[in-house]
Length: 521
Image 1 (cartoon, rainbow, N blue to C red):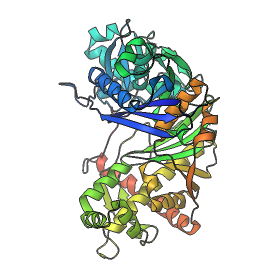
Image 2 (image 1 turned 135 degrees about the vertical axis):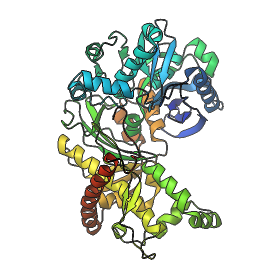
Image 3 (image 1 turned 90 degrees about the vertical axis):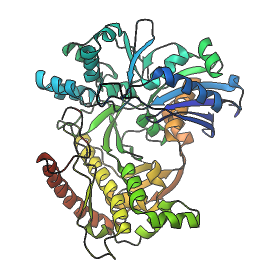
Image 4 (image 1 turned 180 degrees about the vertical axis):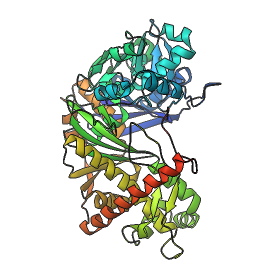
Protein backbone atom coordinates (compact mmCIF):
# COMPACT_ATOMS: atom_id res chain seq x y z
CA UNK A 1 0.00 0.00 0.00
CA UNK A 2 1.28 3.46 -0.87
CA UNK A 3 2.73 5.07 2.28
CA UNK A 4 1.09 8.34 1.28
CA UNK A 5 -2.27 6.93 2.27
CA UNK A 6 -3.53 7.78 5.75
CA UNK A 7 -5.68 6.70 8.68
CA UNK A 8 -7.30 9.16 11.08
CA UNK A 9 -7.96 8.47 14.77
CA UNK A 10 -10.27 10.64 16.87
CA UNK A 11 -9.86 10.31 20.64
CA UNK A 12 -12.57 11.78 22.88
CA UNK A 13 -11.05 11.83 26.36
CA UNK A 14 -12.42 13.15 29.61
CA UNK A 15 -10.49 16.42 29.38
CA UNK A 16 -9.87 16.90 25.68
CA UNK A 17 -10.62 15.87 22.11
CA UNK A 18 -7.76 14.90 19.79
CA UNK A 19 -7.38 14.02 16.14
CA UNK A 20 -4.27 12.03 15.27
CA UNK A 21 -3.16 11.25 11.72
CA UNK A 22 -1.16 8.09 10.96
CA UNK A 23 0.23 6.59 7.81
CA UNK A 24 -0.66 3.00 7.00
CA UNK A 25 2.54 1.79 8.72
CA UNK A 26 1.37 3.14 12.07
CA UNK A 27 3.65 6.19 12.10
CA UNK A 28 2.09 9.22 13.76
CA UNK A 29 2.26 12.23 11.44
CA UNK A 30 0.25 14.97 13.13
CA UNK A 31 -1.91 15.62 16.16
CA UNK A 32 -4.39 18.33 17.05
CA UNK A 33 -5.93 18.71 20.49
CA UNK A 34 -8.56 20.92 22.14
CA UNK A 35 -9.53 20.92 25.78
CA UNK A 36 -13.20 20.64 26.57
CA UNK A 37 -15.17 21.01 29.76
CA UNK A 38 -18.15 19.06 31.09
CA UNK A 39 -20.58 21.35 32.83
CA UNK A 40 -22.42 20.85 36.09
CA UNK A 41 -26.13 21.39 35.51
CA UNK A 42 -27.66 24.11 37.61
CA UNK A 43 -29.22 22.61 40.71
CA UNK A 44 -28.00 19.08 39.92
CA UNK A 45 -25.30 17.99 42.35
CA UNK A 46 -22.40 15.90 41.02
CA UNK A 47 -23.59 16.24 37.42
CA UNK A 48 -21.23 16.36 34.45
CA UNK A 49 -23.17 17.19 31.30
CA UNK A 50 -21.65 16.40 27.92
CA UNK A 51 -22.07 19.61 25.90
CA UNK A 52 -22.42 18.24 22.36
CA UNK A 53 -23.39 21.66 20.93
CA UNK A 54 -20.10 23.24 22.01
CA UNK A 55 -18.00 20.12 21.56
CA UNK A 56 -18.82 19.30 17.94
CA UNK A 57 -17.08 22.47 16.63
CA UNK A 58 -14.02 21.43 18.67
CA UNK A 59 -14.05 18.01 16.98
CA UNK A 60 -14.26 19.63 13.55
CA UNK A 61 -11.46 22.05 14.41
CA UNK A 62 -9.15 19.21 15.50
CA UNK A 63 -9.86 17.21 12.36
CA UNK A 64 -9.22 20.20 10.08
CA UNK A 65 -5.92 20.96 11.77
CA UNK A 66 -4.69 17.35 11.87
CA UNK A 67 -5.30 16.79 8.14
CA UNK A 68 -4.28 20.25 6.93
CA UNK A 69 -0.97 19.11 5.43
CA UNK A 70 -2.32 16.17 3.43
CA UNK A 71 -4.76 15.61 0.60
CA UNK A 72 -8.00 14.54 2.27
CA UNK A 73 -8.67 12.19 -0.65
CA UNK A 74 -5.74 10.10 0.60
CA UNK A 75 -7.32 9.45 4.01
CA UNK A 76 -8.66 5.95 3.53
CA UNK A 77 -10.61 5.62 6.75
CA UNK A 78 -11.17 7.05 10.21
CA UNK A 79 -12.32 5.67 13.53
CA UNK A 80 -12.99 7.01 17.02
CA UNK A 81 -12.41 6.05 20.62
CA UNK A 82 -13.76 7.69 23.74
CA UNK A 83 -13.98 7.73 27.49
CA UNK A 84 -16.20 4.88 28.51
CA UNK A 85 -19.50 5.24 30.42
CA UNK A 86 -20.27 8.60 28.79
CA UNK A 87 -23.58 8.42 26.91
CA UNK A 88 -25.54 10.47 24.38
CA UNK A 89 -29.32 10.17 23.87
CA UNK A 90 -31.10 11.00 20.61
CA UNK A 91 -34.64 11.67 19.43
CA UNK A 92 -36.37 9.78 16.60
CA UNK A 93 -34.79 12.10 14.01
CA UNK A 94 -31.32 11.23 15.29
CA UNK A 95 -30.74 14.64 16.87
CA UNK A 96 -29.00 14.80 20.25
CA UNK A 97 -31.19 15.34 23.29
CA UNK A 98 -28.98 14.85 26.33
CA UNK A 99 -25.54 13.55 27.23
CA UNK A 100 -23.30 12.97 30.23
CA UNK A 101 -19.56 12.45 30.57
CA UNK A 102 -18.03 9.37 32.16
CA UNK A 103 -17.90 10.28 35.85
CA UNK A 104 -21.27 12.02 36.06
CA UNK A 105 -22.53 10.97 39.50
CA UNK A 106 -25.95 12.64 39.65
CA UNK A 107 -27.85 9.36 39.94
CA UNK A 108 -26.80 8.36 43.47
CA UNK A 109 -30.43 8.32 44.66
CA UNK A 110 -31.42 6.15 41.71
CA UNK A 111 -28.58 3.71 42.47
CA UNK A 112 -29.89 3.38 46.02
CA UNK A 113 -33.48 3.04 44.76
CA UNK A 114 -32.59 0.19 42.41
CA UNK A 115 -30.69 -1.65 45.13
CA UNK A 116 -33.45 -1.22 47.71
CA UNK A 117 -36.50 -1.91 45.52
CA UNK A 118 -35.10 -4.69 43.33
CA UNK A 119 -33.39 -7.07 45.75
CA UNK A 120 -30.49 -8.92 44.17
CA UNK A 121 -30.90 -7.22 40.80
CA UNK A 122 -27.47 -5.57 40.76
CA UNK A 123 -25.83 -8.93 41.41
CA UNK A 124 -27.97 -10.57 38.70
CA UNK A 125 -27.18 -7.87 36.14
CA UNK A 126 -23.48 -7.92 37.06
CA UNK A 127 -23.33 -11.66 36.37
CA UNK A 128 -24.48 -10.92 32.81
CA UNK A 129 -22.78 -7.58 32.11
CA UNK A 130 -19.73 -7.45 34.39
CA UNK A 131 -20.85 -3.95 35.53
CA UNK A 132 -22.33 -2.52 38.71
CA UNK A 133 -24.78 0.38 38.88
CA UNK A 134 -22.28 3.02 40.08
CA UNK A 135 -21.38 4.45 36.64
CA UNK A 136 -23.91 2.52 34.56
CA UNK A 137 -26.59 3.91 32.26
CA UNK A 138 -29.65 2.44 34.02
CA UNK A 139 -29.56 4.82 37.03
CA UNK A 140 -28.85 7.77 34.72
CA UNK A 141 -31.82 6.91 32.50
CA UNK A 142 -33.96 6.53 35.61
CA UNK A 143 -32.78 9.96 36.79
CA UNK A 144 -33.82 11.44 33.44
CA UNK A 145 -37.24 9.77 33.67
CA UNK A 146 -37.73 11.08 37.22
CA UNK A 147 -36.36 14.60 36.72
CA UNK A 148 -36.75 15.44 33.01
CA UNK A 149 -39.82 13.39 31.99
CA UNK A 150 -40.57 15.47 28.86
CA UNK A 151 -37.02 14.88 27.63
CA UNK A 152 -37.13 11.19 28.55
CA UNK A 153 -40.28 10.67 26.49
CA UNK A 154 -38.44 11.87 23.37
CA UNK A 155 -35.54 9.42 23.76
CA UNK A 156 -35.38 7.06 20.77
CA UNK A 157 -31.79 5.81 20.88
CA UNK A 158 -28.61 5.72 22.94
CA UNK A 159 -24.93 5.58 22.06
CA UNK A 160 -21.53 6.24 23.61
CA UNK A 161 -19.58 9.47 23.04
CA UNK A 162 -17.14 7.99 20.50
CA UNK A 163 -20.14 6.64 18.60
CA UNK A 164 -21.68 10.12 18.63
CA UNK A 165 -18.63 11.41 16.74
CA UNK A 166 -18.93 8.61 14.18
CA UNK A 167 -22.66 9.29 13.86
CA UNK A 168 -22.01 12.98 13.22
CA UNK A 169 -19.54 12.01 10.51
CA UNK A 170 -21.48 9.19 8.84
CA UNK A 171 -25.14 9.71 9.73
CA UNK A 172 -25.43 6.23 11.31
CA UNK A 173 -25.87 5.70 15.05
CA UNK A 174 -24.37 2.41 16.23
CA UNK A 175 -22.22 1.10 19.08
CA UNK A 176 -19.46 -1.43 19.62
CA UNK A 177 -19.32 -3.98 22.47
CA UNK A 178 -16.27 -2.60 24.30
CA UNK A 179 -17.77 0.82 24.95
CA UNK A 180 -21.48 -0.02 25.06
CA UNK A 181 -20.67 -2.79 27.52
CA UNK A 182 -19.89 -0.13 30.14
CA UNK A 183 -23.57 0.90 30.20
CA UNK A 184 -24.28 -2.32 32.10
CA UNK A 185 -27.24 -3.03 29.78
CA UNK A 186 -25.21 -5.57 27.86
CA UNK A 187 -24.34 -9.26 27.69
CA UNK A 188 -20.67 -10.22 27.90
CA UNK A 189 -21.29 -13.63 26.42
CA UNK A 190 -23.53 -12.52 23.55
CA UNK A 191 -21.71 -9.20 22.90
CA UNK A 192 -24.98 -7.34 22.40
CA UNK A 193 -27.58 -5.33 24.31
CA UNK A 194 -29.82 -6.95 26.92
CA UNK A 195 -32.96 -4.75 26.71
CA UNK A 196 -34.74 -6.89 29.33
CA UNK A 197 -32.56 -5.20 31.97
CA UNK A 198 -34.13 -1.84 31.12
CA UNK A 199 -37.62 -3.32 30.98
CA UNK A 200 -37.27 -4.94 34.42
CA UNK A 201 -36.66 -1.57 36.09
CA UNK A 202 -39.41 0.27 34.21
CA UNK A 203 -37.32 1.89 31.48
CA UNK A 204 -37.68 1.93 27.69
CA UNK A 205 -36.42 -1.25 26.05
CA UNK A 206 -36.60 -0.09 22.43
CA UNK A 207 -33.80 2.51 22.35
CA UNK A 208 -30.90 0.17 21.66
CA UNK A 209 -29.14 0.68 18.33
CA UNK A 210 -27.19 -1.74 16.13
CA UNK A 211 -24.03 -3.30 17.58
CA UNK A 212 -21.08 -3.45 15.19
CA UNK A 213 -17.74 -5.02 16.00
CA UNK A 214 -14.67 -2.79 16.09
CA UNK A 215 -13.31 -2.47 12.54
CA UNK A 216 -16.70 -2.79 10.80
CA UNK A 217 -17.63 0.01 8.39
CA UNK A 218 -20.57 2.28 9.24
CA UNK A 219 -20.46 4.16 5.95
CA UNK A 220 -18.58 7.10 4.49
CA UNK A 221 -18.20 10.72 5.54
CA UNK A 222 -21.43 12.55 4.75
CA UNK A 223 -21.50 15.60 2.52
CA UNK A 224 -22.46 17.79 5.50
CA UNK A 225 -19.61 16.44 7.64
CA UNK A 226 -17.22 16.84 4.72
CA UNK A 227 -18.00 20.55 4.58
CA UNK A 228 -17.62 20.89 8.36
CA UNK A 229 -14.33 19.00 8.72
CA UNK A 230 -12.51 19.11 5.39
CA UNK A 231 -12.66 15.32 5.15
CA UNK A 232 -13.37 13.65 1.83
CA UNK A 233 -16.76 12.03 1.37
CA UNK A 234 -14.84 9.01 0.06
CA UNK A 235 -13.27 8.34 3.49
CA UNK A 236 -14.70 5.31 5.29
CA UNK A 237 -16.11 5.75 8.80
CA UNK A 238 -15.23 2.69 10.86
CA UNK A 239 -16.52 1.48 14.22
CA UNK A 240 -14.09 2.15 17.06
CA UNK A 241 -14.26 1.26 20.75
CA UNK A 242 -13.61 2.18 24.37
CA UNK A 243 -10.37 3.95 25.18
CA UNK A 244 -8.91 1.26 27.44
CA UNK A 245 -9.78 -1.59 25.08
CA UNK A 246 -8.54 0.15 21.92
CA UNK A 247 -5.51 1.34 23.89
CA UNK A 248 -4.85 -2.29 24.76
CA UNK A 249 -4.94 -3.19 21.07
CA UNK A 250 -2.46 -0.37 20.45
CA UNK A 251 -0.18 -2.07 22.99
CA UNK A 252 -0.45 -5.51 21.42
CA UNK A 253 -2.72 -6.85 24.20
CA UNK A 254 -4.93 -8.81 21.81
CA UNK A 255 -4.67 -12.50 22.78
CA UNK A 256 -6.20 -14.52 25.62
CA UNK A 257 -3.99 -14.22 28.69
CA UNK A 258 -2.32 -10.96 27.62
CA UNK A 259 -1.97 -8.50 30.50
CA UNK A 260 -1.39 -4.74 30.70
CA UNK A 261 -0.97 -2.15 33.42
CA UNK A 262 -1.92 1.30 32.14
CA UNK A 263 -0.26 3.88 34.34
CA UNK A 264 -1.99 7.23 33.88
CA UNK A 265 -3.93 9.55 36.22
CA UNK A 266 -5.82 6.42 37.24
CA UNK A 267 -4.15 3.02 36.84
CA UNK A 268 -5.94 0.20 35.06
CA UNK A 269 -4.93 -3.45 35.15
CA UNK A 270 -6.44 -5.44 32.31
CA UNK A 271 -6.33 -9.17 31.57
CA UNK A 272 -7.77 -10.72 28.41
CA UNK A 273 -10.15 -13.60 29.15
CA UNK A 274 -12.61 -15.59 27.05
CA UNK A 275 -16.05 -14.03 26.66
CA UNK A 276 -17.73 -17.01 28.31
CA UNK A 277 -15.76 -16.64 31.57
CA UNK A 278 -18.26 -15.51 34.22
CA UNK A 279 -17.45 -12.45 36.35
CA UNK A 280 -16.43 -13.18 39.96
CA UNK A 281 -19.32 -13.74 42.37
CA UNK A 282 -18.02 -11.14 44.85
CA UNK A 283 -18.35 -8.36 42.22
CA UNK A 284 -14.82 -7.30 43.10
CA UNK A 285 -13.57 -6.77 39.53
CA UNK A 286 -15.08 -5.12 36.50
CA UNK A 287 -15.39 -7.17 33.28
CA UNK A 288 -15.80 -5.49 29.87
CA UNK A 289 -16.09 -6.78 26.32
CA UNK A 290 -12.75 -6.41 24.53
CA UNK A 291 -12.44 -5.01 21.00
CA UNK A 292 -11.37 -8.52 19.97
CA UNK A 293 -14.27 -10.88 19.21
CA UNK A 294 -14.44 -13.80 21.64
CA UNK A 295 -12.57 -11.94 24.39
CA UNK A 296 -13.49 -9.87 27.42
CA UNK A 297 -11.17 -7.91 29.66
CA UNK A 298 -11.13 -8.28 33.40
CA UNK A 299 -10.23 -4.85 34.74
CA UNK A 300 -8.90 -3.62 38.02
CA UNK A 301 -8.76 0.13 38.66
CA UNK A 302 -6.53 2.05 41.07
CA UNK A 303 -7.79 5.54 41.78
CA UNK A 304 -5.63 8.65 41.41
CA UNK A 305 -2.24 6.85 41.28
CA UNK A 306 -0.81 9.35 38.81
CA UNK A 307 -2.67 12.30 40.30
CA UNK A 308 -1.34 11.46 43.77
CA UNK A 309 2.21 11.50 42.38
CA UNK A 310 1.58 14.89 40.77
CA UNK A 311 0.18 16.25 44.05
CA UNK A 312 3.20 14.94 45.97
CA UNK A 313 5.59 16.46 43.42
CA UNK A 314 3.93 19.88 43.61
CA UNK A 315 3.47 19.91 47.39
CA UNK A 316 6.78 18.53 48.62
CA UNK A 317 9.45 18.49 45.90
CA UNK A 318 10.42 22.15 45.41
CA UNK A 319 14.15 21.40 45.79
CA UNK A 320 14.01 18.71 43.12
CA UNK A 321 12.03 21.08 40.90
CA UNK A 322 14.83 23.67 41.11
CA UNK A 323 17.43 20.98 40.43
CA UNK A 324 15.52 19.78 37.38
CA UNK A 325 15.36 23.34 36.02
CA UNK A 326 19.10 23.73 36.46
CA UNK A 327 19.83 20.42 34.73
CA UNK A 328 17.10 20.96 32.13
CA UNK A 329 15.54 17.55 32.75
CA UNK A 330 12.25 16.10 34.01
CA UNK A 331 11.77 16.37 37.77
CA UNK A 332 10.77 12.69 37.89
CA UNK A 333 14.22 11.75 36.59
CA UNK A 334 15.75 13.53 39.60
CA UNK A 335 13.30 11.95 42.04
CA UNK A 336 13.75 8.43 40.64
CA UNK A 337 17.55 8.68 40.65
CA UNK A 338 17.46 9.56 44.35
CA UNK A 339 14.72 7.06 45.18
CA UNK A 340 16.76 4.26 43.57
CA UNK A 341 19.17 4.61 46.53
CA UNK A 342 16.37 3.91 49.03
CA UNK A 343 16.12 0.18 49.86
CA UNK A 344 13.14 -1.83 48.57
CA UNK A 345 10.21 -1.38 50.94
CA UNK A 346 11.02 2.28 51.72
CA UNK A 347 11.54 1.49 55.43
CA UNK A 348 7.98 0.07 55.52
CA UNK A 349 6.26 3.39 54.87
CA UNK A 350 2.62 2.58 54.05
CA UNK A 351 0.83 5.11 51.80
CA UNK A 352 -2.96 5.09 52.15
CA UNK A 353 -4.63 6.37 48.99
CA UNK A 354 -6.45 4.08 46.54
CA UNK A 355 -7.83 0.81 47.85
CA UNK A 356 -7.77 -2.30 45.72
CA UNK A 357 -10.83 -2.62 43.51
CA UNK A 358 -14.05 -3.63 45.31
CA UNK A 359 -16.47 -2.97 42.52
CA UNK A 360 -19.60 -3.94 44.43
CA UNK A 361 -18.97 -1.64 47.43
CA UNK A 362 -16.18 0.72 46.59
CA UNK A 363 -14.85 3.53 48.73
CA UNK A 364 -11.46 4.71 49.95
CA UNK A 365 -9.83 5.60 53.21
CA UNK A 366 -8.54 9.09 54.00
CA UNK A 367 -5.23 9.95 52.27
CA UNK A 368 -2.27 9.45 54.61
CA UNK A 369 1.18 7.97 55.16
CA UNK A 370 1.67 5.42 57.94
CA UNK A 371 4.87 4.19 59.59
CA UNK A 372 6.82 7.42 59.29
CA UNK A 373 9.66 7.84 61.78
CA UNK A 374 11.74 10.72 63.12
CA UNK A 375 15.02 9.66 61.51
CA UNK A 376 15.22 12.22 58.69
CA UNK A 377 17.88 10.18 56.87
CA UNK A 378 15.26 7.47 56.33
CA UNK A 379 11.89 9.21 56.47
CA UNK A 380 11.95 12.06 54.00
CA UNK A 381 10.65 13.28 50.67
CA UNK A 382 12.63 10.72 48.67
CA UNK A 383 11.63 7.64 50.67
CA UNK A 384 8.00 8.80 50.61
CA UNK A 385 8.24 9.26 46.85
CA UNK A 386 9.57 5.72 46.43
CA UNK A 387 6.85 4.39 48.74
CA UNK A 388 4.21 5.92 46.45
CA UNK A 389 5.70 4.16 43.42
CA UNK A 390 5.78 0.92 45.40
CA UNK A 391 2.21 1.38 46.60
CA UNK A 392 0.84 1.93 43.09
CA UNK A 393 2.53 -1.33 42.07
CA UNK A 394 1.22 -3.15 45.16
CA UNK A 395 -2.41 -2.12 44.51
CA UNK A 396 -2.05 -3.13 40.85
CA UNK A 397 -0.52 -6.46 41.89
CA UNK A 398 -3.39 -7.29 44.25
CA UNK A 399 -5.94 -6.45 41.57
CA UNK A 400 -4.12 -8.75 39.13
CA UNK A 401 -4.08 -11.53 41.74
CA UNK A 402 -7.85 -11.17 42.15
CA UNK A 403 -8.31 -11.45 38.38
CA UNK A 404 -6.03 -14.50 38.18
CA UNK A 405 -8.00 -16.19 40.97
CA UNK A 406 -11.38 -16.13 39.19
CA UNK A 407 -10.19 -16.37 35.58
CA UNK A 408 -7.58 -19.08 35.90
CA UNK A 409 -5.10 -16.97 33.90
CA UNK A 410 -1.48 -17.44 35.01
CA UNK A 411 0.18 -14.04 34.75
CA UNK A 412 3.87 -14.13 33.83
CA UNK A 413 4.37 -11.05 31.64
CA UNK A 414 2.91 -7.54 31.87
CA UNK A 415 2.81 -4.76 29.29
CA UNK A 416 3.40 -1.48 31.13
CA UNK A 417 2.29 1.73 29.38
CA UNK A 418 1.20 5.27 30.07
CA UNK A 419 3.12 8.09 31.73
CA UNK A 420 4.29 5.94 34.62
CA UNK A 421 6.09 3.53 32.29
CA UNK A 422 8.57 6.26 31.38
CA UNK A 423 10.08 5.83 34.84
CA UNK A 424 12.94 3.31 34.83
CA UNK A 425 12.60 2.80 38.59
CA UNK A 426 8.82 2.47 38.49
CA UNK A 427 9.08 -0.19 35.78
CA UNK A 428 11.55 -2.14 37.91
CA UNK A 429 9.37 -1.79 41.01
CA UNK A 430 6.34 -3.13 39.10
CA UNK A 431 8.41 -6.14 38.00
CA UNK A 432 9.70 -6.70 41.54
CA UNK A 433 6.29 -6.36 43.22
CA UNK A 434 4.48 -8.67 40.78
CA UNK A 435 7.37 -11.07 40.18
CA UNK A 436 6.62 -10.79 36.43
CA UNK A 437 8.56 -9.71 33.38
CA UNK A 438 7.53 -6.18 32.41
CA UNK A 439 7.53 -5.06 28.75
CA UNK A 440 7.46 -1.38 27.80
CA UNK A 441 6.33 -0.49 24.24
CA UNK A 442 7.70 2.39 22.19
CA UNK A 443 4.29 3.79 21.33
CA UNK A 444 3.29 6.98 23.14
CA UNK A 445 -0.27 7.26 21.79
CA UNK A 446 -1.58 3.71 22.24
CA UNK A 447 -5.26 4.67 22.33
CA UNK A 448 -5.03 6.69 19.12
CA UNK A 449 -2.97 3.93 17.50
CA UNK A 450 -5.67 1.43 18.44
CA UNK A 451 -8.27 3.62 16.75
CA UNK A 452 -6.04 3.90 13.68
CA UNK A 453 -5.73 0.10 13.65
CA UNK A 454 -9.53 -0.12 13.67
CA UNK A 455 -9.69 2.31 10.75
CA UNK A 456 -7.06 0.20 8.97
CA UNK A 457 -9.13 -2.95 9.42
CA UNK A 458 -12.14 -1.17 7.92
CA UNK A 459 -10.02 0.06 5.02
CA UNK A 460 -8.69 -3.42 4.31
CA UNK A 461 -5.09 -2.54 5.27
CA UNK A 462 -5.11 -5.20 7.99
CA UNK A 463 -7.10 -8.42 8.12
CA UNK A 464 -7.72 -7.99 11.85
CA UNK A 465 -6.70 -6.02 14.92
CA UNK A 466 -4.49 -8.95 15.89
CA UNK A 467 -2.59 -8.68 12.62
CA UNK A 468 -2.32 -4.90 12.97
CA UNK A 469 -0.89 -5.29 16.48
CA UNK A 470 1.68 -7.85 15.35
CA UNK A 471 2.88 -5.49 12.60
CA UNK A 472 2.78 -2.16 14.41
CA UNK A 473 3.63 -2.68 18.10
CA UNK A 474 7.35 -2.25 18.81
CA UNK A 475 9.00 -2.86 22.19
CA UNK A 476 11.31 -0.36 23.86
CA UNK A 477 12.68 -2.52 26.68
CA UNK A 478 12.01 -5.45 29.02
CA UNK A 479 12.54 -5.54 32.79
CA UNK A 480 13.04 -8.73 34.81
CA UNK A 481 12.08 -8.98 38.52
CA UNK A 482 14.57 -9.03 41.38
CA UNK A 483 13.36 -12.05 43.37
CA UNK A 484 14.90 -10.80 46.63
CA UNK A 485 12.88 -7.60 46.36
CA UNK A 486 9.77 -9.61 45.46
CA UNK A 487 9.96 -11.35 48.85
CA UNK A 488 10.22 -7.97 50.59
CA UNK A 489 7.18 -6.68 48.74
CA UNK A 490 5.17 -9.83 49.45
CA UNK A 491 5.47 -9.08 53.18
CA UNK A 492 4.79 -5.37 52.70
CA UNK A 493 1.69 -6.20 50.66
CA UNK A 494 0.20 -8.16 53.59
CA UNK A 495 0.90 -5.34 56.06
CA UNK A 496 -0.58 -2.74 53.73
CA UNK A 497 -3.84 -4.67 53.30
CA UNK A 498 -4.27 -5.01 57.08
CA UNK A 499 -3.48 -1.32 57.60
CA UNK A 500 -5.92 -0.22 54.89
CA UNK A 501 -8.72 -2.23 56.47
CA UNK A 502 -8.15 -0.38 59.74
CA UNK A 503 -8.13 2.98 57.95
CA UNK A 504 -11.51 2.18 56.36
CA UNK A 505 -12.89 1.60 59.85
CA UNK A 506 -11.95 5.19 60.73
CA UNK A 507 -14.02 6.37 57.76
CA UNK A 508 -16.93 4.17 58.85
CA UNK A 509 -16.77 5.74 62.32
CA UNK A 510 -16.81 9.27 60.90
CA UNK A 511 -13.34 10.09 62.24
CA UNK A 512 -11.67 10.53 58.84
CA UNK A 513 -13.05 11.46 55.41
CA UNK A 514 -13.04 9.05 52.48
CA UNK A 515 -10.91 10.08 49.49
CA UNK A 516 -13.72 8.86 47.19
CA UNK A 517 -16.99 6.93 47.40
CA UNK A 518 -18.98 5.32 44.61
CA UNK A 519 -22.41 6.87 43.92
CA UNK A 520 -25.13 5.33 46.04
CA UNK A 521 -22.99 4.39 49.05
